[in-house]
Amino acid sequence: MRVKATINGRRIERDVPDSITLLHFLREDLGLTGTKEGCGSGECGACTVLMNGRTVNACLVLAAEIDGAVIETIEAESKDGKLSKLQEKFHKHHASQCGFCTPGMVMSLKSLVRENPKPSEEEIREAIDGNFCRCTGYKQIIEAVQDATGQLKKPEDIHYA
Amino acid sequence: MLYEFQYVAPKTKSELLALLDRHGDSCKIMAGGTDLLVDIRAGLRKPQVLIDIKKVSDFKPLSFSEKEGLLIGPATTCADVIRDKTVSREFPILIQAAKQLASTQVRNRATIVGNICNASPCADTALPLLCLDASVHIVSKSGSRIVKLKDFFTGVKKTALRKDEVVEKITVPSSMAGGRGGFMKLKRIKGHDLSLVSVCLVKKGSLLRVAIGSASPTPVVLKDFPAQVTADNVADEALRSVKPIDDIRCSKDYRLFMIKTYIERLIEEC
Image (cartoon, rainbow over all chains, first blue to last red; front, side, top):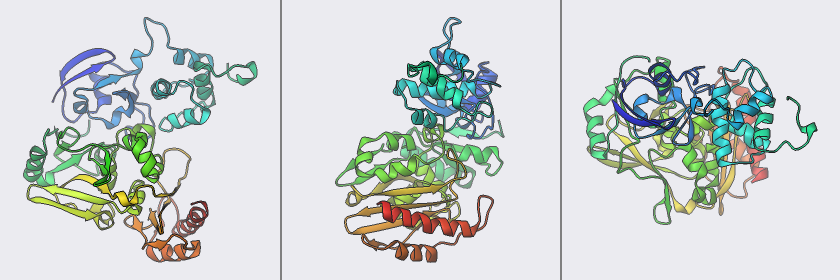
């Protein structure tokens, strides 16, 4: 299947096998290994990328399906070696431990913050309902997002920095 | 990945129907792919041809009119429904249930029609659609027909759909617009999980309807009740109408207990 798509701002045109996933295509063919494979069946969210602005599990999308789509992955998050605000706050609040869930988490939260610049704690929790983290217990991640969206005003609000 | 299959994305309905007619048993229709690709990966299904219906231009998108009611197209995702202002105003129960389906990422891909055609006993969006008296519009090369959703499910993951047929839309009559109710889903965790049991209630005018999921081979809708019915009456009818089993997720007795509990809570709240 011939596909034309925009991936991290770069237009590509490739022949892709019909039976490979977007996840496989990103990692194996384009070398974009920031997107991780966890469960491979839409449970864990480690492979979360944005497709036309919405989060999807790259393991549940065929590469052939991205014809005409705009895809964003974790590789587009930092610019010229400079971390994005979300990444910087993840670092500051220890929101990443083993790091395997982090790219997917950041993509889900990027999508949230784009649509909702001041999300409540409940909205942050809902936005990562499809992203498992087995290390942090999520609290550091939520705090990082609250900081990135300018919602941690007082020193006593900060527990993990 | 997996094994080699062929992917086709027809652009017109006639092209799609010809493909279905030609491939029959060896093909499978794909919409969001969130059930199908999981099953393929697990080796549960092995279609030779995957027919993606999302690019068919003559299928209609989500819309609402007094005449036709709510129209849900084959490519309408759970997220499309959740974000739609008209659905939010006229059929909020559909959004309540769609929000409980899996995770954000899955809701962005999974379609309502796909949830119905997959015909799982725990299909979240089946319950509000049953309460809202939805109809399934089916088309094939040899013609078209309309089946009531309550007659569409024929068994666990089985439907009235023949091999050469495809669902071109699901409609909800405008007489049900403005109906209010509730959806309760028992899960093992707060996040992404299948239901252990689920109950949906919709009230419109003098009518009250209740549907129950994960408690029989198919989602079940009870007979119509008057709006003032008691919880005991509904619960008696519910327990007569379902046939839950003991399985990996919970016991039959717990399911029956929670159906009764959810009915009591919903009657009190709604």
